[in-house]
Amino acid sequence: MMRRLLKAISVLWLASVGIGAADEPSVIGRVKNTGGQVSITRQSATIPGTAGTEVFQNDVIQTGDDGSLGVTFKDGSRIAIGPKTRIVIDEYVFAPREEKLSFVTRITRGTLLYVSGTIAKLAPDKTSFVTPSGTIGVRGTKFVVKVGGNQS
Image 1 (spheres, rainbow, N blue to C red):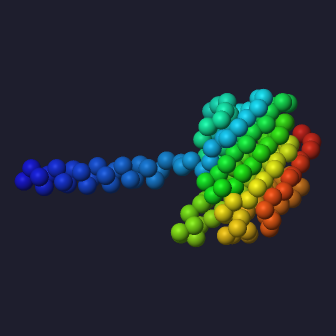
Image 2 (spheres, rainbow, N blue to C red):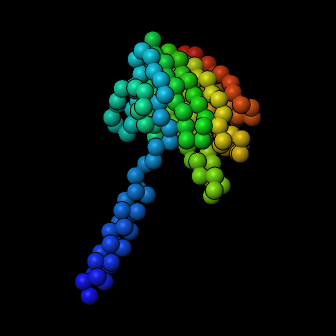
Image 3 (cartoon, helix red, strand yellow):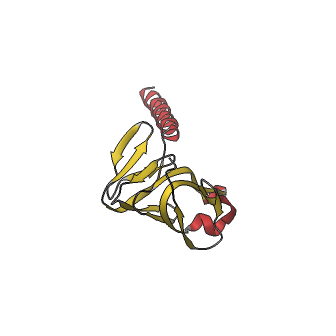
C-alpha cells in the first residue's frame, strides 16, 4: 500500500514539474562577447549584457555609444550588433523535429551583422529582420543591416 502511495505521489510530482517547466520561457541563445555599454531588458527588468548572459524571446538588447555584442542562438545563428543599436527578438522557435521554426528580429536603430543557422537553412521564409522602413527576408547566409535615425 505504501509503495503504491509513493508511486502515485511521484507521478503527480513529476507531472507538476513538467507543467511548470512548460510555462517558463526557454533560453534561445547566449551572449558570447561584449564591449562597452550593453543592456538587456527582459519584461520590466534591465540587466547588464555580459558574456554568458542567457537570451530569451522578447528580450530588448541595446548598446551604448561604445557598445558591441555577439549572440549565438540555439540553431547556430549568430548576430553581432554595434554601437547605438537597439534590437528586439520578437520570435524565436527552434523545434526542427516538430517542423516549428521561426526567427524574427526587429532592429530599430544601429547596425547588425547576421550569420544564418539551421532555421534559415531549413525554413528561409521563417527568418526575417524588421526595420522601420521594411522587412528583410533571409535567403543567404549572412548580411549587414544599418538603421539610422532616432527610432526607438
